[in-house]
Image (cartoon, rainbow, N blue to C red; front, side, top):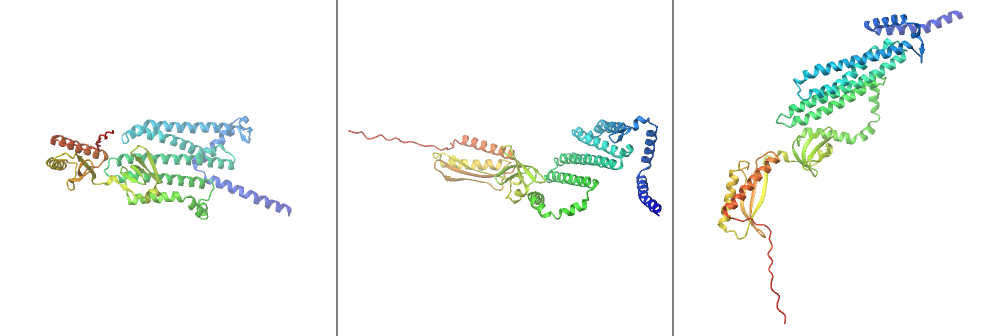
Length: 402
């Protein structure tokens, strides 16, 4: 009876072992099975010296590991060389000036990805302990996943740069603002998906992890309050479109040209050539004065004439300025005012209120320059003098004392 119990016990223990081996064999591809058989035959033909134990491994495994890494590194290096040599001339047809940068940024991630993929696919040939082989495969998979994330990240960056080159040629600035936002969003998604993939392949239950985040949702919301506010601020700016890239705006005491509307913040180049970074949440709540969308640009000034100017010359000067306004193509003739407006403390003031029909700050300054130069020439032709603040000091003689 005791023998039957022992035999039953042995049978119970040995049965799972045979099932495990069959399961592993069924998962191997025909190529892997063939290679495994070949490796076994080669190992059996080696001298006993290579079967010696060293730190828990056989000596042939160390030698095979070095050869294995050398072959994988050589193949990945060869692939990188072929990509650099043949892909660069092909890309020059479509992306002149950026082909070299693209190949240089993509070649190394591809090389490392290929290296880790080759190592992970052939790691079973070393005939390591199953648990150790599983750990090694997990490590190689992590590195291959990181290389994939870097590869896709840089590919997204390259596509965005090419898209910006095309959008720069269009008249609308909306696409210039849209491309960076899409690029940043895609890159964030790539990183998040890549991290979740790595966690899942290392035994982490991603579904439970995401569900567990709901328990700490309040703490997460408080910690990410500013980030979420900036994210929704960027969406508000994108939907409302109070400005576009390239517009000159004034908001919160900051005046300058919008250079970039990002995922979290926007960058403004001031007239001092400094760069101001403002959070989108704050920018969305400010009153934004978009100077870049002005249909016309107002210019208001007072031209002062001296008090000894005759009335007929004042009238001739006013009519001459009106004629200059009407004949200047950059001035909007639908609304302009030129009048003798005020008798100031030291001058007779001629009010000039006009609008320049230009689109840029440089064009406005050029139009002002041309207009004021013509006014100066008119004054010289009519012989009128322009007034400026002066003081006249009258000195009376002191009475003589006896």
